Amino acid sequence: MISLRAAALTDIGRVRQRNEDRYLLDLETNVFGVADGVGGLPGGADAAQRAVDEVSAALREAGPTPDYTAIVHQVNLSVHALGVKLSPSMGIGSTLTFGHVQGATLHIVHVGDSRCYAFRKGAIQLLTEDHSVENEAKVRRSRGETVYYHEANRNALTRCIGQPTPPIVDLIERPLEVGDRYLFCSDGVTRLVREAELCDLIDHDATPEDVLHEIVELAVRRGGPDNATGVLVYVDAAT
Image (cartoon, rainbow, N blue to C red; front, side, top):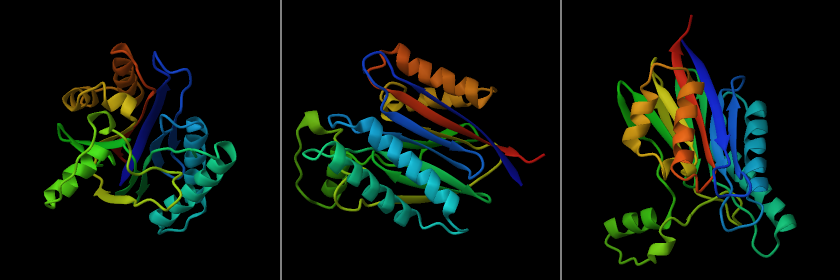
């Protein structure tokens, strides 16, 4: 048997006028994650808030085998409808990356470029793939296609919550082990803190609150050009 400890932290950073990141941390339903309002569009905070609220409500009502793709598609519809009201000409959007623990399995659900990292036995692994122009170009080139993109657009999203059509949803299942640690975070963290540094920080013998504070504070100290948000989950042996 396992038990979970978790902490969440968000910081507006040093540049942005508003924090458009939101997080999920619910130890009753065992759901953890982040949503990051899409930059360049109005209503990013509204989109992210609607996304996390809808996910939380859906998982509270779901049965023992949630249909995660259907949940995300419903969230997408809700955010899109809100965007029609708030920003008819441009819409609104958000990333959405969350994990739902059922028994000894972590179900990861992912759209956008927020991330989930797994830490196990001294090593860190990125479990999600950024849905960006650059990454999509790499995949298409691996299939022999000729793809060009402007360097300035390489981090632009190819999938988000709030788009007119249902997004493709990445689903990942991860068997849990005692001692595992999982970090869900926005790109305000990952663009400023290297993977090796995340590994060293998560490896500390400290509470999830203390470790997460170090991670987010490091991103802010390095300029904090974006909102920085993380949720850190520890998998412990049940007592």
